[in-house]
Amino acid sequence: MKIALAGIGKIALDQHVPAIAASPDWELAATISRHGRVDGVEAFTGITDMLAARPDIATVSLCLPPVPRFEVAQAVLQAGRNLMLEKPPGATLAEVHILQDMAHAKGVSLYATWHSRMAHAVAAARAWLAGKTIHEGRIIWREDVRKWHPGQDWIFEAGGMGVFDPGINALSILTEILPQPVHLTGADLDFPDNRQAPIAARLSLSGNITADLDFRQEGPQTWDMEFQTDAGRLALRMGGNLLEVDGEPSGGADSIMGEYPALYARMAELVQQGQSECDLSPMVLVSDAFTLGRRMTVEPFEF
Ligand code: NAP
Image (cartoon, rainbow, N blue to C red; front, side):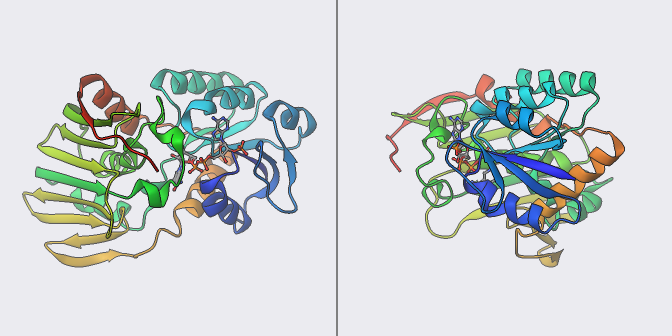
């Protein structure tokens, strides 16, 4: 099946292009980007031109940052094409509800991806936690924004989500593996004096779960979560890729390779079956943190 990729920047080049190239299901038939290109692939600078010129491309995958994404997403669905969205699926929940309704009305597939849910140990963690009672949970998601998002000022603009850009990955795993729904009960958000989005956040969630998200971590990076249950301790490390049970390694693989090929395989399934998948529960937690969170001002941040 032919697919077009929009927003040829960091994640498109690091993950999407190689995943599509290796996929038995997809052929990268066009790109839409003002500056980015992929060698040997027809390049457009605007979505409208691509949709008019290439009626043979039935699916479009968007890798734009969240704020400019909605207009492009609407154009894709309006043209009756299937739509795949990088996380987070929009800048606001209302936008994504509109996309869901449009996809339904047009009879096309909408896939709001959560790449961290495809990490090696997530399915095993979900299976282990099923039926257990969780007494306490702790998420620690601390990374260096300068290393992973060099110069990406959009991430600290309104709608860029700040530390929730990586933090929503942790929340996407949490909402996938917990045996019961979870909701936000409180948050402290640290906003740099010169920015519109938080650089750190401390969340309290139902079920005695906390999350410590920080974009200022230098040295070793931490993407861990730990749960104390009525039947032992589970830990997921390395962004959901390594599983530990009662302190002992219990499966997974120390690599993020595999998440994006799994997303494109799932998109192929959804298109072939005429279905959609759009779980907004990670984004509800982020949205509620902005609604309920106490705002602290911290020192200015420059890349
Ligand atoms: P990026 O490189 O800054 O942006 C991707 C491309 O989007 C840019 O190259 C640019 O292409 C276009 N773009 C940027 N700002 C725009 C604007 N205001 N209006 C229109 N187009 C704009 O960002 P990224 O790191 O790839 O992240 C994109 C999405 O992927 C985000 O939602 C992020 O959460 C998600 N993601 C990122 C990572 C990561 O490690 N970076 C990992 C997983 C998921 P043109 O200038 O060529 O149009």
